[in-house]
Image 1 (cartoon, rainbow, N blue to C red):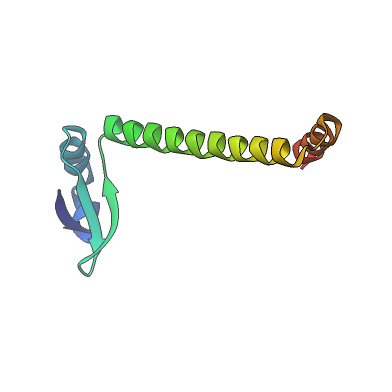
Image 2: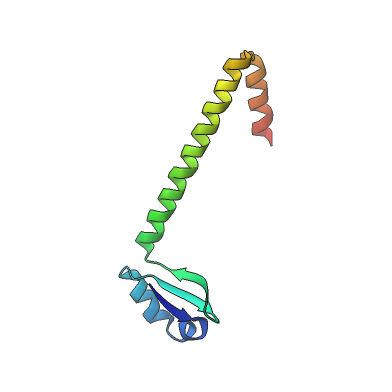
Length: 90
């Protein structure tokens, strides 16, 4: 990954996009501080997929924890269904 100042990136955006599309990420920054990264679309899609999978796992873990609490406290199905309906309206 290479660093390019914002001013240079403005002048050479087309070249930097071509470079990034070949799999070489380009860090864009100001005063030596990284501000953004230009990535190939495939790499961005891969990162988004990882993020989506992690969110799905966290969601399923939360559902499992809720289910365990419901069973442990012997909460009735009717109370659970009502809570779900109320939550969906929000």
